[in-house]
Image (cartoon, rainbow, N blue to C red; front, top):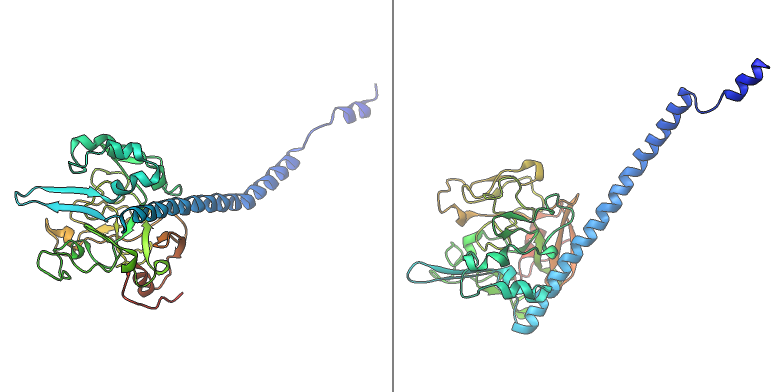
Length: 321
């Protein structure tokens, strides 16, 4: 037998060096392609997020067509005996986001937190979930209460400044002049928005509290109390500055850009100073809905004065790009 011929015939496959070279090339290709794939996925998620906001904008406009004004930011009615009636913004627009079945579950004779409304509060609302939020799969974070990622433009005010109790209130115990299109017991008419509907914010993104969900109010679309879905423009989008929450009602989540601290000297009435910034899981900015129903991506670097000007409906500010 020809030994050299046998060795030649039985020599096949890769050498170790060749195999390592192939693995290295594959690794380099993955390293080059992975960021592009991730960017494409995030672009798709951002587009889906904007579409969610546009659906909510269409719901607001359909509500306006029916009732000749935007839905109230929250319904809060206090009675002499100390009790109150409360209902959140989301309850008003359910029929206009194809959630008539959830609307029918609500007992409007009772406040949102009444046991008769448990099934409604627990119902998933996909249009309220941003796909980029890592907590979006866990929408129900409290017993009998769903969370969401879109809140209302509450303007530059702190919570009680537009609750008939704050220092900007025009008459004792009465309703302030609303500089933003939503407030407690208030929804703007188109005639109120003299800055122009294309220059006025309606809704913005917010992040949901994670972990100790029973404490953190942020993202609680079914709770019309402070620091739930009322977004103020006192801070720029995704600000590193902390949200001010009533003591014990928010949890610090710096890993999710959800910093928190109680207002200086806050006591049990600290919610009067509450303020919550617009925040998102999108790199570089937040998605917003304008009062004309259009969507826009606003950069984290927007000038704070311009951001605040977008939140007012009749102050006549000139908005710089």
